[in-house]
Length: 479
Ligand SMILES: Cc1ncc(COP(=O)(O)O)c(C=O)c1O
Image (cartoon, rainbow, N blue to C red; front, side, top):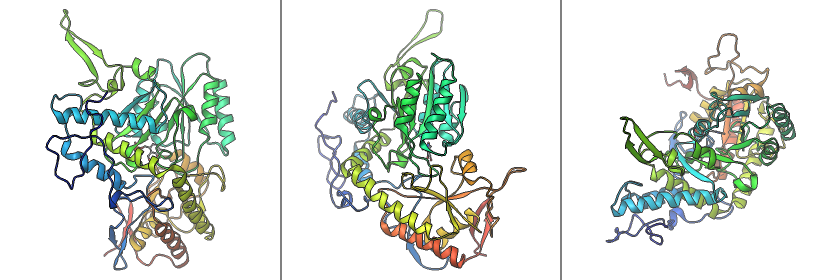
């Protein structure tokens, strides 16, 4: 039971209360008011203007949500309201330390509710999805086999190298994904521990993966499942029980809460039985010298076991605030609005024959607001630089930390060298890269409209500026 169950953080504009009674009042007021169901949620940076190389300024169109989404205004306001009460977590007798500890633990409970966690699940605060999956890799039981599709982000593809890993070929339909996994699991040695790592939504194509079906296939063969929800959680409800996955991992900075925290939530047993991820204070319950001169350690069996060191209470609270904000906005409304934006982008790009949208599962596959493409006659780096410099649109170009997938999707189509920016390729390798546009709950219609218009104009008229390669990136030539 928290020590201050009903307390509230006072808004930063008011004088701090004499006897601080805090935790955690969602802020209200103009900046963080609930949005109209069909409008964007207020995010920071929505009024920021950037210079155009062709002259003048324009409001920045942040269309790189898949890398890092802007902070929700609500998250920022909640963090600011708490900031004066900041204190150490799990290690102070003072009022603000108690209060901060309560806030940290109640944030954990908020995240558990957001993910629909089972009563015995643990929610571990980490630094990011990458950190969460490395933590899970660290706690794998002896002899655990891991199954992962080659299509995964490197954060899901690479942490398992200490285990016996089976890399599965990219499927071309959701059904093929399930069959591929079933075949691989049928071949494995029975009875040993096994883990399947699946993405909820691809960070390259935005396509939704058949998580529930993959989890059922895994469980039928005695394997467990971890869901990489880095791209799913900001766009869709993620319910651990409903999807029947064993763990879920996501990052705060993609969920409108850029304060350096991520989450690994799920089954407690492997977490409880493994050595701590980091050894140190907070993870240990009792440490004592032994008669032989050594040291005995009694480690926590709760989430604290893998959270050694001083916890990032602001990061945890920011994630909890984002979870609350998205829940209150309503995922039905968020998903419906995002679907409209996706349709606009898709239809706009379909009118430009030089644009090829990358897809594993086909044009009609359901997806989140993430879409990658290449443009005939352009190097992707050049195209992305022109979108930024001439239209104030921020997208990403490259291989998106999913090199095997992008190589598979681009197949035999090498990138045009273009005017500049062709990425360096290894000996015998083609130069490959693509452009990714991504958006979410804070994206106004104007941003996607500007993007579609910019693509049309650039393809039709070409860039209005000269560009050159600098440190491997295509940049406007100001010379
Ligand atoms: C699907 C997916 N998984 C994992 C990650 C890694 O997230 P982070 O960089 O926050 O650790 C990303 C980041 O882009 C991602 O898109």
